[in-house]
Length: 319
Image (cartoon, rainbow, N blue to C red; front, side, top):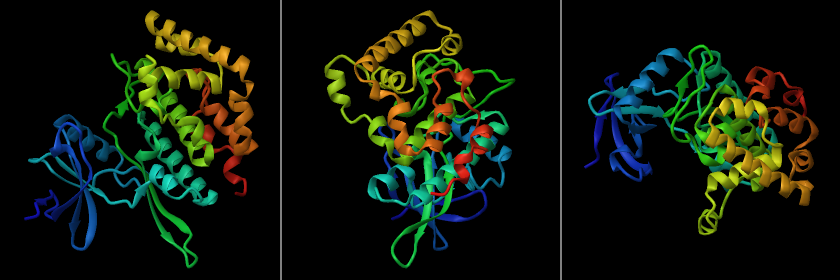
């Protein structure tokens, strides 16, 4: 018999298929749910995240760009979210010909979501294509038309008081989409979200082959961690380690590790100058390259802000 949950609103939800299975605790998996012929998503969460979500939904009530929960069940620690058809990651993987104008529409809305967070001093810390939820319809010729976009998954979101950075004893967020300082877990700020958003823009505009790591096992066999490989790649693409990054990381061990990765990257660039984003990024178009370059600056103190990004002339450029 299907499990039913009653939300705080009094609405009854029938739990359905597992959308995403939690590796360690089945209860924390993501489920599809139905209520009154509408689809929703159930997420059983630990108490700290449940409390964080209540705080977020209070601050961002009525947001159309941030996927906040719309109902909950406190006794079972369940949050109920709107259902979306897919993610940006799945959309591009399944439909490589997804129209450029629709990709740009998605990126714009993600930028507005980040702006909304940053305006109240929240840092997402896990901006990546699979945390970008998308709904779409199809026209008469079968072309997808985006109808709704939201940035979701605030499990590790952080409110910065007075511009303070987040310091953790471990890296947080997804290794593939982290900023250089995010790889160290030290000095994470709004600028860290900007670096991740820059990578998302590169991915959405067709540069995914430069970003995605598909050979984790081979790296491990060679004694290289994915984090090391990604850090080296990012310094190869976007430039050497900067003083602003070292000051923000502010740890002798981590500064030495970051400088070591940068040195390896610089040697690689000497042999292959085409590794630099200033070379291969031209394929994304000059205005897109110009905008993204400011977001992926290795120096977090010199990265463009979300307000600057959203006023960039690329958004007005015809696609």
